[in-house]
Image (cartoon, rainbow, N blue to C red):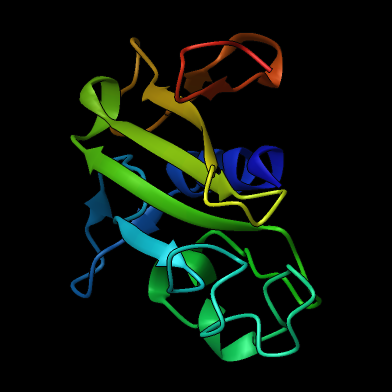
Length: 146
């Protein structure tokens, strides 16, 4: 799913947009969004009402403008929560961190995985690309690539 988030963030950054007056908007990543679904993990009774250790399907959880802008939603049950953090800057100074938090054993030992994406060093108002973690890999909270 982090790969889907990365693709959604890259698409958002590279897609030309205009503001309400029709002026071009500099390339940037979408705004931050907190852990979705809410709760401490997918084992939290708040999001796992049937007690199977997975976040229950909840289409409403994905209605935040950032998830919509990235074309990201999870329709069925799933094991991880997702967040977008530290989105800032435009063009070559743009950056964002995409995260997944998973407590696979429902033992309170959640692991966090993240992918950092940066703006194109050669970005102009007319053309932007993005650069990110090589090979689509991600780092866990210990800094290990997985």
